[in-house]
Amino acid sequence: MEKTIARAKSTVLIGLQYGDEGKARVMDTMLKDYQIVARFNGGANAGHTLQVGSINIALHQVPSGIFYKDMMLYIGSGCVVNPKKLLDEIKEIKSNKVKVDNRLFISGYVTLIQPHHLLFDEIYGKEIGSTKNGIGPAYADRAMRAKRSEIKNIRFGDYVYNHKKFKSIVRDNLAHMEEKHGLSEVDIDKQVDEFDKCVMQIKKYLCNDPLMIESLVEKGKSIFFEGAQSVMLDVVTGATPYVTSSRTIAAAAYTGGDLSNKYHYKTLGVAKAIMSRVGNGPFISEFGGGKSELYCAEGGGLDHVKEKEYGDAKPEELLASKDLFDIGKGLRMLTGEYGATTKRPRRIGILDLVMLRQNCKLNGVDELYINKFDCLAEFNKTRLPGIPIVVGYKLNGRKINYMPVSVDEARKVKPIIKYFPHIKEDISMFKEYGNLPAEVKGLVEFIEKFVETKVCGIGVGPEREQFILLPA
Ligand code: IMO
Ligand code: MG
Image 1 (cartoon, rainbow, N blue to C red):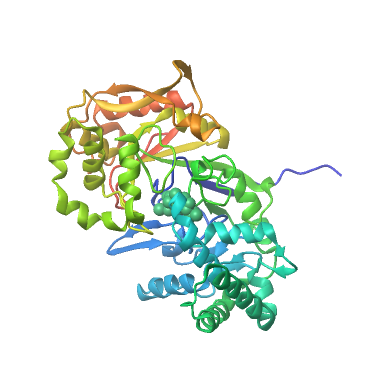
Image 2: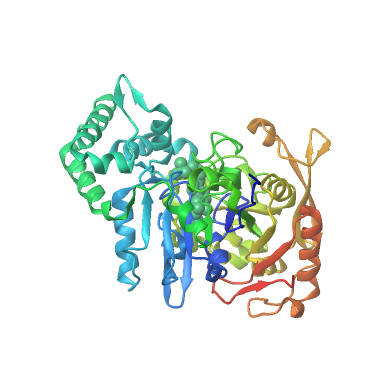
């Protein structure tokens, strides 16, 4: 029989830097052509901020299509779900008069984040600056399956089918953790009862049919896969151990999203014009290097929440400083770079085109979107001779055009910086690409050529309308 090529129906969107690139807002502008939005990786560690009219909400587990009235929402098997946090999130969404029931579906294959995962992350997650959502421990238990003949990984579908059995396993897992770490203050009964109650409350969203997404797409529905985290945080190809615990690359949509890759249509990548990173790990173009990494990590970050930093200094004065650390701090304040999940100050860096090129190529990005382009105008307030952009790497005096695999080696890489003419006006009110100042268009064209990927849109502010699509 002759093989027929499937109609292309599936789009994948991923982050190309260290997360928080503004993936949700890019999606939000293009969802009208889709009927399903699906998550395929991660859990409540994601913080996808959406600003729609007067509503400003950070979504963690619920897919970002929520504000489209008839959009179906799917949490795929590649995800890990925290039942309590999901319920809280649903409650917040509903309080904005947005309907959730009968359109949110969660794969029965998702791994449940158990109370002991959260405890473990609380104790050990600090080392890499995790969001303490139990993500790593949950994925570790998924791979571990069982230990000493006890079940470690619990999937949503298994739990719901036999919740008495699995409730007692959740208790055993927590009791072991408590015993091992001498955490006598943990109220095991209370935590396990609450966990059970929450899982049973989200039971109505359970999808037990592995063919559901496939059959909807086959019937003509278009699906949009929303990546969480970013390719630089990928558990295999990121700078381990400073990564998340899921696969975040574009292809992961078809392992964690419960659809065959034969439906793939296109891949969208999102970057940010001034980069940020939360948590530890190498960041070649960071303003202030190690000093900034340490400052942002200190005290689990909670000492440095936005309000405290604002009390410290005036951002404009910091920008005028000779110290790059100060410039990073000033930029963070002026561009509001604080974690949506943890409120931690994000480390700030120069747009790195070597990294961007590598990630566009590895993921086959068809369309590149760059957020916060308006923020580049802040460099006008610095002493720098122009807008700094990383256009090369040097390692031991030799030029390279990729990020080395070894994390220790990556820390030795020196960025090669090129300065572009300052943007002298506020571009946040522009609507048409053609009307933008020449400095903006010149930079966009340079980026496009360098990364060998079409730039299709730039963000010039947080509002839905502050997003400019480039002419095709
Ligand atoms: P979105 O989807 C930015 C980072 C954490 C930490 C590392 C491991 O909003 O872009 P984890 O809790 O996953 O074990 O933490 O990964 N991280 C993120 N950074 N954006 C995210 O998600 C992130 N999710 C995890 O800061 O360094
Ligand atoms: Mg985020």
